[in-house]
Length: 390
Image 1: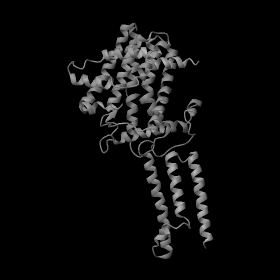
Image 2: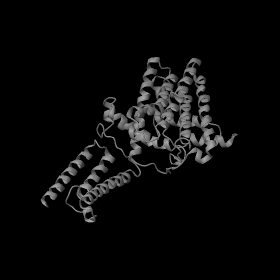
Image 3: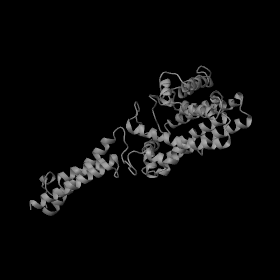
Image 4: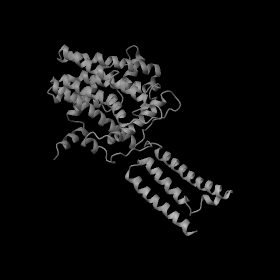
């Protein structure tokens, strides 16, 4: 029997080390946050709302697991795990603000600023960032020497600052507009916005567990790549299904950031495929190297490709009618629907079909190659009909 099977069974049954760690973490996190009734009550209620809602808790689990992996008890890393989760919550609260991504829902609930107001949402994010460092220094009470606490503070501060997390959001905002981002730019955004904090989580867990410098460097490197892989998984999940309960906010501030985020989600895996990073990266891209869909998959993407392709079909038919008018000096509407001729209605239809497939699946995909091949056959046949008809 695979050793992973008992562990998975224990997880589903609410047992096992992962469940134990997460229960201990949730209790610690709830105590670390200010009580909702403590003044100022609305601010503290907004902070608890932002942090204690549904979530994967991936980053704190990585902190606790890294601590245990290097030989320390996971309980020693609880302050670092809570601090990382508070920084993560701060980043989400600020990302959702109207000046940024302008999201109304997250994880099936109204975002913090929608629930408590924009001003209170902004202040709640600020307070969560400050609280993260207040909690982090509690590592000293769990046996970490002052030099280790200072290093932990520096690690988290760098991960949350302008060179990493906040800088990644700025790069995301700079992606506003029609300019297409290449794979390198998307990778840079993901490494800063996602990989940086995951890397810090592993390093903080290693520090709490007393890992040597070489092991900490390894954890930092693993965390960056894990963060990038995690973002690819998020992007693929977004492509498979639309977000539930999300109300698009059109015409408000931050529209460029809202456009750049799905763009980055789309290009995450495809940008990596265009610039392979090794066997693992190529294995994570099953659709083949170089496929670059030009229409974002998800809600409405097929409809958008269909109407665009249909417009091309009408354009081709219109060209046939216009060319006929140039030669005959009178309009003949029958020319728009005649089978023979080049371009014919058949040619227009297959051209629309191949265009739609190319927009949806990529102009270098196998499916587009097949549809293009049949399109050429139909066009050749249409030309033959014209010659046969004289």
